[in-house]
Image 1: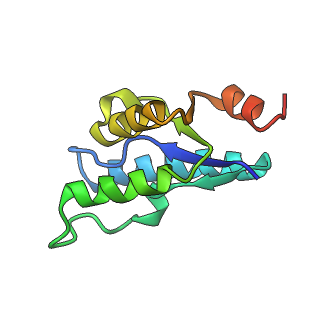
Image 2: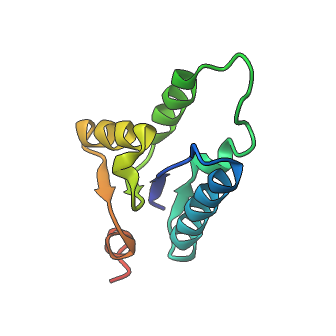
Image 3: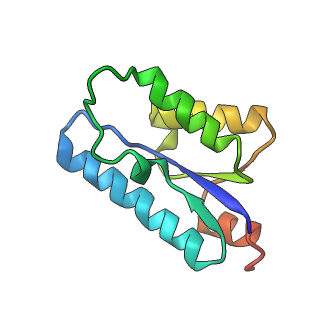
Length: 115
């Protein structure tokens, strides 16, 4: 089975409600991958609720996510990824390692040989 890393906004300066909405967006994308025969790796769900964890530096989260991404077959860059510092770094890493970058549901379906 092909493993797809879901990359997109997590944080939001407007508050916790918007963080939850970002997590829900990533969750829906991950479910789409699963429903179409892929394996979704959704870091949003892996660390949901950890915001503000004392003693964990921002770079630690990103390094952990990059470690997970390195084990994936593709990355799905969700809409608005390019305005997220973390997602931008994840996409840059994926490209540097020749990990396929997908940008929409059709890309995902083609990658999973569904269309």
